[in-house]
Image (cartoon, rainbow, N blue to C red):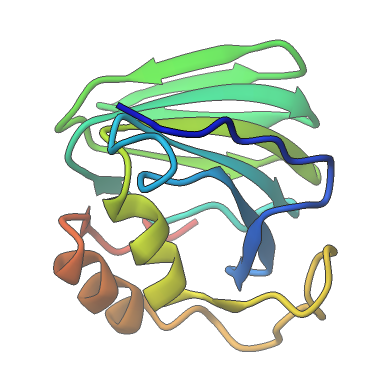
Length: 158
């Protein structure tokens, strides 16, 4: 059981830059007694993750922007107010169709923020990073994922 209340304002939390996006931990597994991790993600168009699956569930609420989800062979678009719940073990990926802000809840908590710390880099400002001109290093992300129970496949071409 969590022993303390977590209160963060917009822009607060442990943040990482990855895939040209800003990923902020709003409540960590340590802070919730391992029950869940809550993250706020701001991701530019076209910069979503490769296909992946992980232990536990993932619930995504679109706060701003539009995303396209690819879940077990289905393609589903969502805009502000859309909600997606992805069961454990489901292969999925998404891509923002425009810069999008998401609230994402992972259960159980803990492993996922460690993945982001391993695969990303600490954000030095609460803003999107300077866009990279290099393609993402899939192997580095896949290796970081493997260390934290996240399985990845290369992103489909096109």
